[in-house]
Picture 1: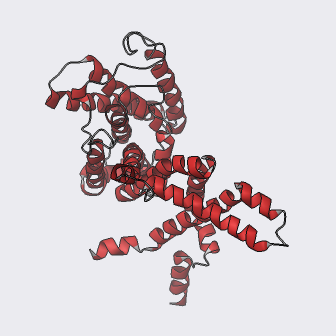
Picture 2 (picture 1 turned 180 degrees about the vertical axis):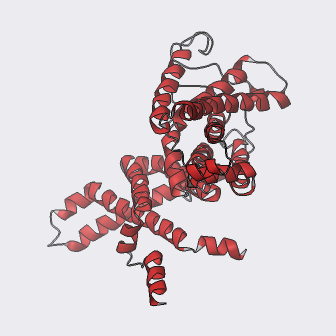
Picture 3 (picture 1 turned 90 degrees about the vertical axis):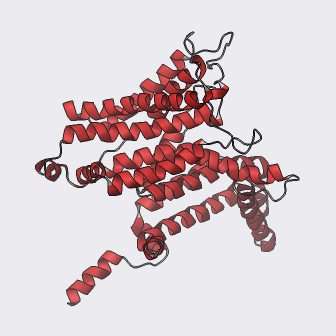
Length: 390
């Protein structure tokens, strides 16, 4: 328990919290500048400054209140389903983001920068969808087989990048970016072929996934949240164990710290590259299965949405630690769920949410900036001064 408390209140966690706070403060200013009432009252600011200040407050409070009602709890709703639905939407969005973020975290902790989350999500969704609508199996078998198919497809897709790096020294950043294009174009193509396209459909869309292959919607059909949420929580624990308690995880972390020393220590660098990218891809593929077998009922060209790139941000925000990735995934899920209500009720451009997400990454990547804004001391410099005083 003491270790958990120390981790929550350590300097790194405080900086993360302050980075998020800073992003929301600047986002609030942008919301105010974009508000029509604020622009009108600014024209007579010096004659009636209270009107301007009230408009600024109302715009910021109204936007973040709408964000809360769209992401956590809608206290203005007239029925219980509508009241709690925002929270279930947050968890629904957080599931694929966190799963893919765990995949990115595995790669980052191993010294590899995986930008291919989008392509790996697509391959996971394609493998799961094909088994889901084209194969007839009993209910207790169909879903696991579909999920395994998606995980294997994405794992092989990601592992191929690791093989290219091990065999040819190819840069995984460039390769994974190009693989995203390959996966996206391949998905669009197969959805126009008889193998994947729904019979009689004009648009690129698959047949509906069989009921036996869908994740269980444990709160009923009024909510999109499904059993893949529990799979995501289980994967957080599995990845934590993998990275911190297993011998394979030790090899991954050793590779991330110093590849040359790892090679001298007897670690097979080539095989480790393949394993890292295969596991990273498999986790992203699991995110694809949660989409096509859970939240959605069809395979479409937009199945990956922006989850692949959000996953990179979530992994960075969570500092590539499983529980940190979970917390960041919940935050981004809330921003996604609340942005729709914020735009509809307050006419706030949905791009503001993207700006807030980008600012979070900016502040996380620049700790000295956060320390300067909040007048915090640098622990490293303090330690150096202490050593010098000795």
